[in-house]
Amino acid sequence: MAIVDKNIDTEPKWYALHVYSGYENVAKQNLEITIDKYGLENRIFDIVIPMEDVLEEKRGKKVLVPKKTMPGYIMVKMMYGDDIWHAVTRTQYITGFVGPKGRPICITDDEARIMGLDGVKNNDVKVEINVNVGDLVEIIEGSLASFVGTVKAVDVDNQKVTVMVEMFGRLSEVELGFNQVRISNK
Image (cartoon, rainbow, N blue to C red; front, side):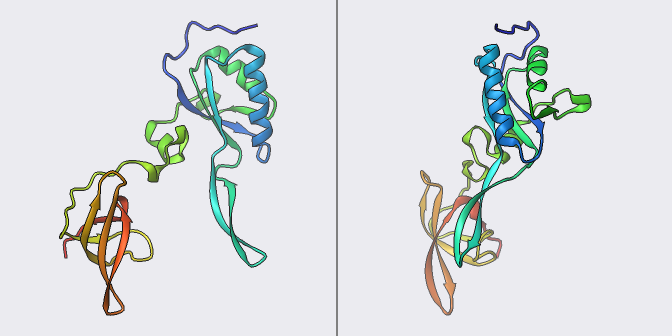
């Protein structure tokens, strides 16, 4: 039995759903069952539990552990309509959409990028910087933040620069991403 609504979005957008905290995986599975049951594959395209890898120390070793960044929420990419609202909010462990009075507000493209939805992480975004060999740049991120160095090489395709930085009285070569440097005023 397929649900059809004439007042649906024409473009898929991301929406946030409230779910029972600790039951994000079960809520996702239940929503997948709802999608199959009502034939919504052409309206609901992706379900994401926001996660990030966190470095933790376990038994004296550092390991990357996936952690939920937004417990109690899952993100859904869909073409919204009132029929979807009913199908989704009646799914077990989902309490409703994020928005006023339970009516959804879509997530902006910038918010989706920051959360890493659609496979695009904020740090994967292409950075444009007008830097040339011989330019002075300031490192703005990482363990060498606030160091100033001279650009030795520029790799536009990989968004990397090689910078000569003075550390401990001698020049050292450091490879950095475009997002880690800016043209120096010093």
